[in-house]
Length: 556
Image (cartoon, rainbow, N blue to C red; front, side, top):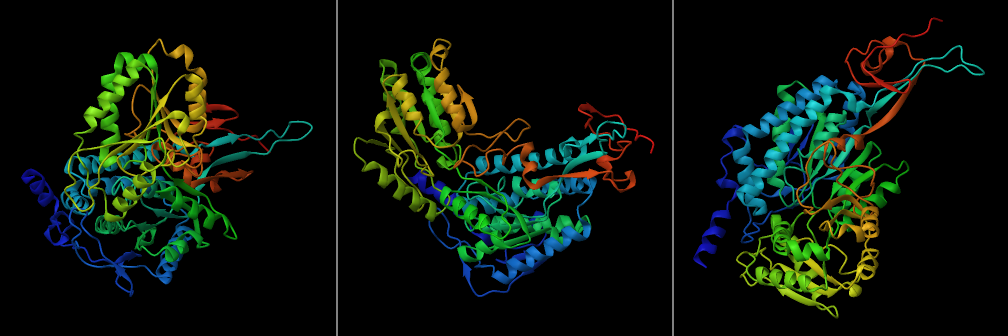
């Protein structure tokens, strides 16, 4: 118990204890950032409680008003129209500068994040380093340039019966993007996370709704953006931060006619509500909502027999990573009703008894977790397994497994509980397993553990899982989303609102652009990406073939 109290005390950091020396003399104010100015107007406010002991961490945070939402969006829209878009070089310069600023300011950022979220240092630092690296990678992607998907169909004036005009197309920015950050990734999917970085990289101004679970971290990140824009002599209206909890005010960001797209990471209920608002606008806009899933993990018989202990170890590590607060947390584990499957479950039960009780991000998430668990443990034919380790903080919870026959899976058991919760489903034969899999809705991931002796019998299973998932994993675990070129973080609804797009990885820029075709436009009026000489040296699709060569227009 003494060790636990010491750990809790070490995490009990207040805003006033943070010395943001690397952010010069900046201190958290609880304000909004609009057009480079910290705004203190407003009457409503909210406070942030420590997830460890529910003490108030620091200053009150003002709630943004409808007028402030509108002003931030209008200024961003004017900025977009006046400059239309920053050059590729300037955008890359901005991203590199942001990455460097984040690197320099790690110490105060990490201290604030840990105070607000109860994340341990390795978890918080790993996420911040990932954010720095992905920001630099997007800068490199911009400089390489091929992401604009430049296409040229040269004119064929002699073609009969109809001549072909000169046609050229590329991806251009949409306009103002509203970003609604995630609770569980205060760096990677937040104020300077993947949504903001990819929108700025695409040439779109950004208005961010900070997450009320970590508003101090949001404010410090926004100050870094403000200072970086100032140092690069870029328009401050490219970026604004609004702090708010009020749902009605938040709706104004989604419904504002100048906003051209919304990026959201969170729960299904919130994602569906945002999609409805966006669809009911006079001019509907895309909502790129990543809404989570149960991420099924299927263990086949021979894999259970040969790799049971390794599967248990890997599952528990994945299941408990970040206190189970990952959208790719494995919330459904299928174990066969075989002798090896029984041994795997016994091993899981034995290991589970000593699993630590994590502190969740805040008291609201902890309360939702307890409510979700209570609704499931009272269902018929469900056995429960709980950790035997004492909860030592105000937002601490007991990890829990529900064990049930695969045939008894219900919609409630197949709905995500955010936190360290998973359902273990025992299946009799392949028909029983596939029948259960067919109950699943869209998923971010689906995983199969199999040996070479299992593969001959699992073609139908893999087809069913792949049809429902955005990422298919073999003999691994779904947590850990690599921000790479091939990564797809999304999936069929309701895992994501638009399954064609990824919110993580280098393809994420495609969310905030649209194709624009130029017909018979003189060379001097074309973007450099489409000009005859190919001055940027891009790989372009020219008359159906990829080439870096320039083109020659036919004589009139």
